[in-house]
Length: 383
Image 1 (cartoon, rainbow, N blue to C red):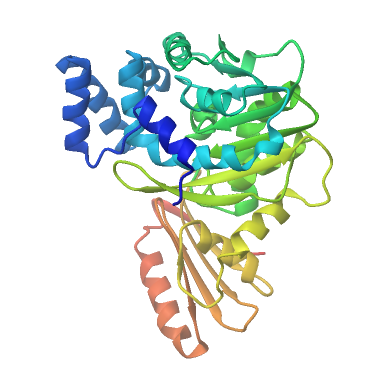
Image 2: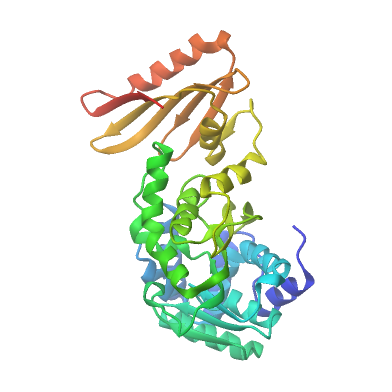
């Protein structure tokens, strides 16, 4: 990734340096804070998050913002890569920065302050419900000599500016803002139903953006909800509130301390557009789609719906009222057969020719037989 000189200078000045591994992170945090118990508490929370256990997001961000130095250091480890991408985007989108801008879920103000320094003629407002984060954002702005920003401590769902903004930004915010409404939603299932659930979960936040955005105003959103789950729901929630995605939307990958993570990048405007949320979604994913190749994750599910010619045969496995596995068969537009296999944490799609139909069906029958019908409910249907 090529990074603008201004972005790299800012990251170095703030202290957003790459951290190679978890061992370096732990020792570095302990050294910076001089507080072993604090470091242990942070590690405990992060381990719980990594293991998928339910955690109190508010408690985590309170812990993260123990001090400005600690907050920046933790951000460097887990968001330094995506912050660099966001910095590049901010430099590339100069035509969107004028008048007043609202940064929702600003945390300790790292991105807000960068935008303010890049565009001194724009008045920025950063909003976050964590009082410690807001105090750290103010400290960072003072440290950097930023004088065209203000930071407001308020739940984003309750924020209403005195007048609408020309630009609203939401960077790495939706996952936390909508956590209570979306974290329990299934990873698999009929796409229209699953994405509609995400649409409903994101509806209130999309409404906050619409209420605070001028007619004709712009939205820039970079979120952890991607094609694997939720991005189409997010685009649809915005569309329902009169905010329509525009050209430039994409999927983005960024390195953090433990892995490469994928993000959805949404550019949208509060004015009627000719293309729908689904059109935008299909346009973005079709750029990297190749029919006939084995696929995984969000691209596997996309291929199933985008490339199927005719009916798709589904077999859903439920435990009580929750879907836990999904299989599907279809024929692609090129005539190849398609076999979709999705579980609790993975989605895969395989293309095959008719000669392999028997062996593929045998594999399907074997996997399906593992679900005891006394415990699991099997539902067959076609679309």
